[in-house]
Amino acid sequence: MPAIDCCSQPGLMPIESARETLLQALKPVSGTEVISLAQATGRVLAENVVSTVNLPPCDNSAMDGYALRFEDLASGLPLELIGKSFAGAPFDGVVNPGTCVRIMTGAALPAGADTVVMQENVDAQGESIRITCDVRPGDHIRRCGEDVAEGSSLLQAGERISVPHIALIAAVGVGNVTVVRKPVVALFSTGDELRQPGDALSKGDIYDSNRIALLAALAQMDLDVLDLGILPDNKQTISDALERAAKEADAIITSGGVSVGEADYTREVLEELGEIGFWKVAMKPGKPFAFGFLQGTPFFGLPGNPVSALVTFYQLTVPALGVMKGIKWSGPQTLQAKLLKPLKKKPGRTDFQRGVYRSDENGELVVEPVGAQGSHILTGLAAANCFIVLARESGSVEAGDRVAIEPLGVPLG
Ligand SMILES: Nc1nc2c(c(=O)[nH]1)N[C@H]1C(S)=C(S)[C@@H](COP(=O)(O)OP(=O)(O)OC[C@H]3O[C@@H](n4cnc5c(N)ncnc54)[C@H](O)[C@@H]3O)O[C@H]1N2
Ligand code: MOO
Image (cartoon, helix red, strand yellow):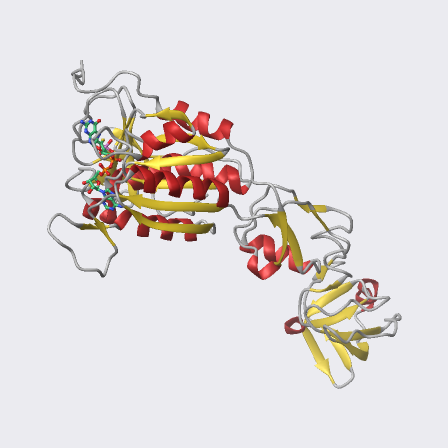
């Protein structure tokens, strides 16, 4: 029987409910824009893409060789070469009985021909050819519309555009796409102790790593950012910044000031100016995460501890921002792995411990926790390639136990 966590607080919201609340409360931003296809990776389609052409646009050759009539091969007689068909320069005539046309990969199949023979299987002598192997009717022909039929719907509104999607859309001749507008995210850090990396530190100061990491993550998510910088622990300053953020941005992310210390103002100000959706989640790290709305603008209050800030960003904020971008969240991407070292845990909060997973010599997925797991230990997070997710009511786990892992470094929502 696992020990009860005497220090856990009642009333923490399970992470599943927290996520559900966020996903229910948010909707895609309104507004669309037309952008060029090459700029569209990761963007969300606002309209279906329908093809107005066939792909391939006509029957064409899959090989460099000779286009001929299959029925001519029965006689075994040589075929007369009457022309050439290149991709971009088709043969205009007709392949009549007893004739053939030299054809290149991608070139239109000439009228009359129904089969292509690879040049490696042909004995060409001047202006006539003989076939040196078995041939089946219709060999090496790529049929008109076999990839995409004219009028068919290729992609639906709401789909996130990938590079292969772009290849497909370009192949049917569409150069621009209509996508959901990028949400603008306002971001600031709070803390009198925080300094910009590169600046000098006085006693008690630390560098603001959270905002820099979040700027990077938001850029990776292809979101526009209103960077409001580092704010001191001052209620009025925080209040002014939140008011501006609510007016100018679609979402607000802050780091720090959501716990119960005497200088923790962020959540307090949110409570005064807006409404708190929930505060405190049964997760470790990241317990003091706060979510709410400020004049209709969603607010994500990340805890200041650096690992807590990123864990709550990945676990709660990314799915929420995904919804705002127009993407349906498909649930956590988990794998099962064999734990190589024991991990201590008390029931009460879902744990996101940091680990390194790999395949062992037998091809089995194994995971080793990184050393220290404190919510201020950034080296562990930087060394990790996954979260080891231990369920809320689970106690400690032993080496050899199978655990859920969530790989890090997968594309963000
Ligand atoms: N009595 C209690 N104290 C604390 C509790 C609690 O439940 N009762 N919760 C702890 C937990 S869990 C966390 S997480 C932190 C969160 O606190 P805040 O969100 O209010 O954050 P701060 O107090 O501002 O900072 C905490 C910690 O993180 C450092 N920090 C802050 N911002 C940054 C930044 N941008 N870059 C790097 N490091 C940052 C800050 O210097 C502090 O060391 O509260 C616990 N306390
Ligand atoms: O929940 Mo806190 O985020 O452990 O440090």
